[in-house]
Length: 171
Image (cartoon, rainbow, N blue to C red; front, side, top):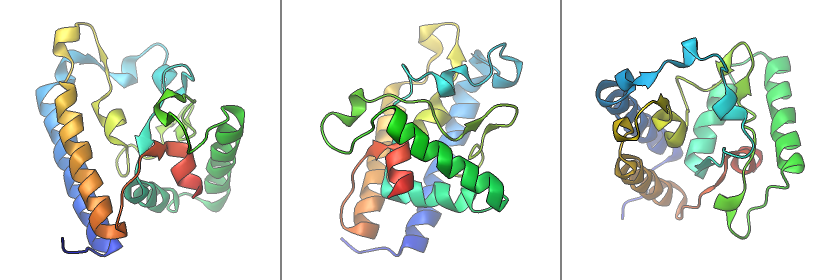
């Protein structure tokens, strides 16, 4: 397998996510409730009993690049929230990491997702409030994209691992 530079991997990651965002928007989002009209905006992002978004190292790099565009004080505040999230929810890289849940430190009240356009993880792209279960995007769509991202990580870094978002952001 031919190795990729991190820059090449990030470019391909953006292509994968952009295509996925377009597929979800075109095929499914029109059946979902708009986040902008939600009476509890961000509740799904900060529900510590629900959120267990896992990302890879390459996605963490992409998210960090997006956060680097924030003013320094805002960026520092986000990383403080990341640290507080890791501590508050006792997030660990060992064991069943998919059983660990947390409130997303990238959600900011009044602003929304700080990485909405660039860097947003796949589960967040796919998630929306659907009235009918039949309207949900099939989980196979996300699984297929996750396999692609896993291969990209392997080509860039030699391996791939999935960890809770706050842990990768701090590594």
